[in-house]
Length: 526
Image (cartoon, rainbow, N blue to C red):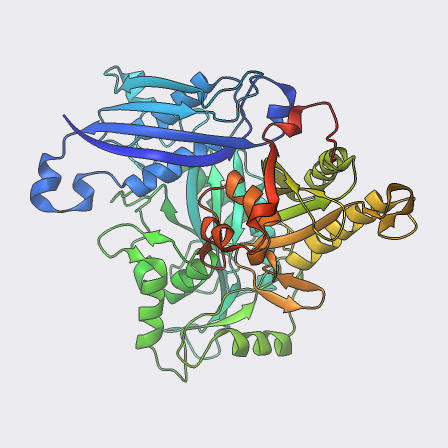
């Protein structure tokens, strides 16, 4: 039996028996060895004759980031079940590392290793059926999280309002969460009678516990609730919902062909999808990197009549006027036909989630307590969740009191400006009772500084919104804890580890505690 090995797959999850582990995400690292027959793949050089290890890596991170379990053993079993759902895999060895386990003695790592194979009885076969295999009974295995991409469109009535309602309806399905919403695009009604209204289109990404057929049935019910009928195939419609991708699976079932058989030809699917996830891949014979497929369609089109134009970026939060939409389209679609990327600085849409990195700094002797309180406050911001916490660092200052520093990672549905405003409010709470931004009774000690250092997909250089934080590249007090929290982190395309090595103040920071978040005592800077 041949093997494929994935090592060091890491993600943050809320797994453990202690109460704080139910709420505070920590890093888990997974090694997986897949046992399968690669003879045919070696001869055909075809992806369909092996397994997509990139997809399996995403499956592993989905399980880690999914529902809470108390035991690492259970987490390992869920990962094994998800890997075995890929039909080519006959057996798998899974090792789950929990390097930050709350153990009171010095240690390097805690790991659980299990070996699981494909069972032969019908019930196990059904549980381990491929997530993308719609020829199965269409129900998902318990607690298995599937990832799907759904296209939305319509050209009757208040289309933007209908699409917003549809996104919320999908998010409300049992076991389903919308995790990404693309910008809204306008598409001419090609091949339809003159005077036919333009279509509006978007793409969403969601996780779901529903099987593919169950999800399709739910989408059809949502369409019907908004007045859609399927009497005519090519006709005006208030709402159209199509499953484009489901766990990267492939199926030629006429009831649900996966991936969507015409997605590779449709700019109104590919362009929004590429804007939502520039690294997305469309599986199948005509598949490939979605961004490249989208750019190919745009390059082939008449530049005076592009197949899609940007209608609005923040359409989930408010309707855009025609003038605003036109301005946005001009700014977002360049002369080369390429789609622009959202700066993310505007108000969040309440559904799209972005990763953000926030630094904490204080010269107060009770800085550790202030940091803990700030983390609780940030985690309590609506639409935000703390998913990573760095070790605590000591910073030696040459021209003032020494400081403590740490970095946290959050997933947030706020825009950059909204998040910066929320951090300012938390800072002011920490400053309450002080005469200014220093506490005279503590020798001028600064209570708390919170800075938004980086946010996925966001570039903003305005007085009230500077992302990435312009001086972060030179401050070891930011870079050192960030690298400890995420060794693969990058800032502006550069590895944080490289920036730390070049930082002029690297010699003035030192690790103070790597389990400070669960300790009861307060730090003491001397």
